[in-house]
Length: 340
Image (cartoon, rainbow, N blue to C red):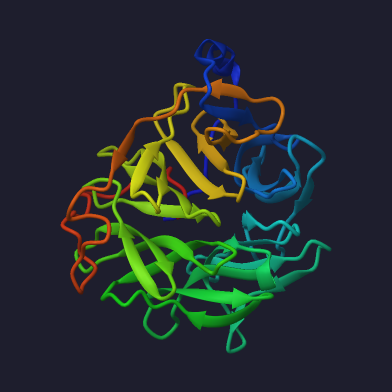
């Protein structure tokens, strides 16, 4: 049900990007760990240290952390897990994520401290079964979701220093709540499913939920947020291919991320406070730097994507069941899509 990412490596088409030089975005291709058949970078901190996962030649998935295009530290959660995915990194080098495990619905969640200590996230002494994604330096606050063992519902939570703190309540009637990011102010971003099965992004600030729909497809998901309120996310088209965007929550404005490498899909993940974003396509994995951000060396300027405003009936307008007028997509996403 949950397929591993099969993101292909290769950056040959990036040579043609030189023709797109402009005062716009910058794209830095990431050198994957040695022996990787595929890789995804989920996050980067202000020190240009990245965290992500890669699949080796035997189809096994491992976590990696290290300086941008530098010497990586490879690690596995261990136990009975079959794959390790670091999903976010803070400025101290702490990482959270999860490990797929056949004895769990999804897998065990962990916090890996900068010194290499690995803590298992638990609630009432029971390991959380779900996805941890989102961590900040302040009190090592983190977030994610878990499968409630009593109801089977996927519920969001917050944690501090690797210890469960509380569930996340959006104040809406929803069937799933999945926070995916947290900033230094404690603002959360993620997605939820409404009673009709449509997916909506959300930003939860000071206890008030802002609903974010990039379009009417019912597939919006937010995956990152920084201290400036810039959020990253994606929507899916009719074929299940994801298309990435940046959402400026202060302006209510979306900007698409267009990676000119020939890929049919683009996914965007964590965004740091400097505006650097972990991004992946079918061709490779990158750091995408927004306009006017000083990007690490080795990047190529590319054109900005298109921009648009949130439409009436979408962002900030919803009923008590979390519906915004968009509908759930028909059919199932292709098996090759990664877990959210």
